Image (tube, rainbow, N blue to C red; front, side, top):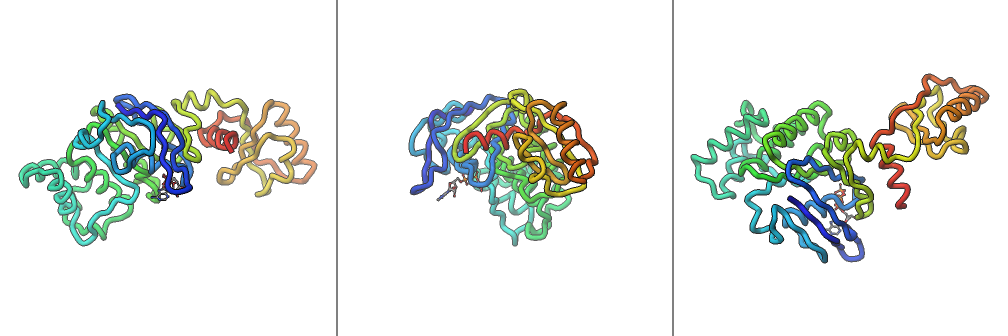
Amino acid sequence: MISLENVAKRFGATVAVNNISLRVNQGEIFGLVGPDGAGKTTIIRMLTGVLRPDSGAITVLGSGNIETVKGDIGYVPQKFSLYGDLTVYENIRIIGALYGRTDKEIETLATEVLAFTKLLPFKDRLADNLSGGMKQKLALAAGLIHRPKLFFLDEPTTGVDPVSRREFWHMLYRLNKEGMTIFVSTPYMDEAELCTRVAFVHNGRIVSCASPAELRAQYPYKILELRASRKNLRPYLADMVRDINAFGDKFHLVVDHPLQAVLAVRERLNASGIEILSLKEIPPTLEDVFVELAGEVN
Ligand SMILES: Nc1ncnc2c1ncn2[C@@H]1O[C@H](COP(=O)(O)OP(=O)(O)OP(=O)(O)O)[C@@H](O)[C@H]1O
């Protein structure tokens, strides 16, 4: 459905995408995951025909010329420009007209996509007066108006509240169930978990590409999750663990031998007068996997 072979793109001295190869199959929810500036947007822009690669080959929906398959591609860019002074319905109408649909067709399609995104009750509201989550739903609705087979979404839920994010993903799942292939970029690890496969992008390269379960299985270390009475534990533990990362009020200690490490950590923190609220081995999260992969390539 999508293939990239040794694709590269630079902007002046910046190498945004550095010789990446990738294949995405029909029916996938494929996730592009990585920090800001990793190259995700540039990859999506090349796949949607907005940018041309400097070198390498791209095939989308069986065609090397993206222009010829644009009618089957949907794209929600990172910064979706809607017309704030027009209503939800009017925004959708403009997009429908851009795709050359008649008024009658637009009415049917708009009702369909607005019902799907639960925006129908708000169809007469000015886009400027929508909440952040609703604006993203409008972007989704706009991307769906021509019923694409392949849907690209560039960080569609960045800055959206957790409830709206969940709703948004429910919609993506429904579209996928109906046969749509989805290619989505996200900085959120919980969203990466929801993808069939994930490519982790770092400094313009794909450092790993597999299903979330495979990525976790490939992780070479063990994780201890620690909660303690002190906020900064690094000075106390850094010399006895491979790595230590804070996730909210918890620490993930990267270790080789969890049983030995538990005893040693207990001893060290007790001796330092730090209370352990909980300490247990947990399966690695995708965040642990990515922190490790990013460290390897730095
Ligand atoms: N049009 C451009 N001109 C110059 N540099 C660019 C341009 N587009 C992207 N870059 C640079 O290329 C690199 C990759 O950017 P890109 O936007 O693809 O990353 P990203 O992973 O999507 O991150 P973000 O979430 O911040 O958009 C960055 O260093 C960025 O500054």
